[in-house]
Image (tube, rainbow, N blue to C red):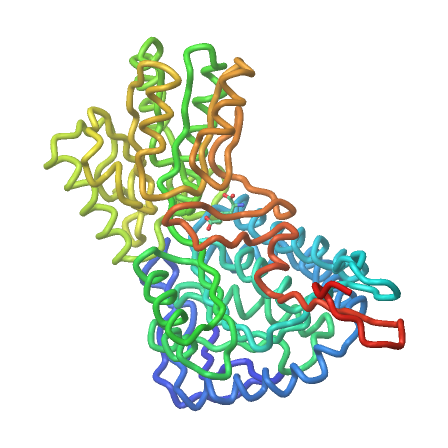
Length: 492
Ligand code: UN1
């Protein structure tokens, strides 16, 4: 058990006077995994000072040397993958296969971003004047505040920390209160790999600590992944201070299955998209639009398969779906299910807490499927973040397109079809940052931009080369070697 009254600041464990909070195993809520401090304003002050001091030398450290550290961190993550996966499964609940995937995503990110060590390129451009050169450089921004969720406890911190530090920034990470241990392990590995003190600082805590980070003048940029409700507050407060801010928020992701699709493949994808990570991905498939010609048989098979999903502690062999993260999420999911029932949707399966010897002490919820869902119902409009999905019949491609786009969110969409013309139209017309053809809505790879349109984000993209745009600002440089005053835009 980790009983920490400390934050990790300036490469050292610094004792906090903040009250401790409990880290619980969601598969067995009787099991306390550790205690972590609810950081105080003084703790944050120390972290900001450390990050500001470290920035002065880190920004001057050659980029290939920064990258060497990330490369070593990737190697260490690989070496410790199994141990870390077990820690994460106990802390967050998802099955071992998935926590291994989470760590793999951080490994991929480490190697991918390390590649920028010998690239991180700007542009060289012609000048409109003689004997004058023009070029651009990426400049770091300063101290970055990173607030990460619990559903990808290592992958999402890696999406933020690694691009931030390769660009020469220093960071303060505040991980979700449900997954402090995974964040701690990640930060420890970065230091084992040679991260200089103060470049990556870790403060534990909840909303109050997050709020203080947003308002702290020494933090120049906030990067946040979480709900739209919180993201809106982050954006408002950053906006008032003209602070840089990147947001990755909710989704109401949809999969379309046309009548010409490989239905078995589409079914397998929909099950994985809806119930993988117990539906707790911002990319989770919470709406499935099926051509009415194949709808009835699809629903029947999908529900039969959903009922068969093996639920239990994620570290046990053969388990396919773990618990949800905590009691309040369980209550929230169930409230959505009740709203669906009271608004007249048809509950095909699930709809309650799972019961049984293995699952009673944990926050397990049954895979839940709704049909007869009308477009105004809450279950089809709002993000549930749990193992709940809706299946809706459509008249064909155009009907599906209109219904999929009828949402405030725009993260991930998917279409199953063999018709290349319709696939291309879907790519063009589906309103989302990510579209999959013949694959589920989950499973983004780190070297492509990740993020969404509409209320899912505020125009930034994590991962891919686009992550560098979040964490750097362009400097345009003009070098005049004519030896005389040359005036741009002035006729001679
Ligand atoms: C998230 O749910 O916040 O594309 C991230 C996926 C994962 C990342 C999900 N690679 O489903």
